[in-house]
Amino acid sequence: MKRTGAIAWVVIGCLCMSCLCGCGDILTQIKDTASSVLQAVVTDGNSFPAAPPLEPLGEEKPLVEGLTPLSKREYYGYALLAKEENGTALQTVYNRLAAGVEAMDEEINLNDSTAWVTVDQLNMVWLWYCADYPQHFWRNNGYAYKWDKNSGNVMSISPEYTMTKEERDTNEPLVEAAATAILTDLRGLSGEYERELAIHDAMATAVTYDKEAKYAYDVFGALAEGKAVCEGYAEAFQYLLHQAGIQCLIAVGTGNSELHGWNVVRIDGNYYFTDVTWDDTEEKDIPVMHTYFNLTEELLKRDHVLDLTSSYPLPPCTAIAANYHVKNGSMVETFSVQQIVGLLKKGKGTAEVYLAKQTPQEYWDWFADNSRAIADKIGFAGKGYDCSGYMTDFGIRITIK
Image (cartoon, rainbow, N blue to C red):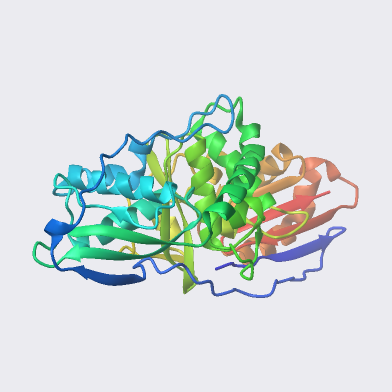
């Protein structure tokens, strides 16, 4: 789901406000995370061929020299499986799924006496694998399976694919090329926060919200075609952060009461919510905001509702240190001429703030009433000036020139 912003102007120090809204909030359909499952019964599991030995999974290849991708052992769902009963077996099944989808196998054999799973366990492992592997953009969330009705063990799974192998082989280099163009600018950025911010801003600039795009729900649509809905944004963001060595998760739920997806990001050991879709303004002159960059759960809940049943349990997001506006001193608690003057000077006439208590309209009205005094303090004393603002639900970007 995409939310829209509004633009307001003050001209030559006099209030003259107007709002420009987009086409309105658009309901998006997140893929059915419960999966589309077709069941087939194997009457005698003893006659089903044994699964071949599982080859060790290799790590993701680096796309940019100097950037080491996140180890697959640190993928959140994979690591979480270790805490489950029979965790080692579940991780083995997870790896078989990942290897089989990578090879685009029509049927993945799971008949392994050291790692049998029930139908319910398979569904959990499948969902957690899907949430960890945005790079497998040719895979749908649905599957069929075969099981032994006597033991209850799953014998095999047949994933659904959205592309042929030939199409995948053609499209994968396009995704990698688009990702490389973004990741190249990260060289020299050693901090996780700085790398996340660079990816966030590049994605908001490069991707356009488009619910009609054929591959709007995956990495290929977002990166190779530059068109996506919230799920495509979130999966592409996760893919790029994994390439940059940063753990990233998918979160789903509702935003402003409509289906929506976004991310959880681990920065310097703490977890935060980030919503790139809602920070993408679609405005030519204001391509990106940071209203939803590294939020706590408390701040997220102002207009997002988490669905805690659709995938893996999410980690607590209570830290505030890596929030964009905390780091930049632009978290607004009270109306302050001194604060906005300092931010406008720092931003050479542009300031973006997050409103912890006031609404954007209340802040804009206050700013308009005090714009003459503010303009004087940043170098416009005795001069005319133009002032403009762009509002989101809890943020506002102000420019004075």
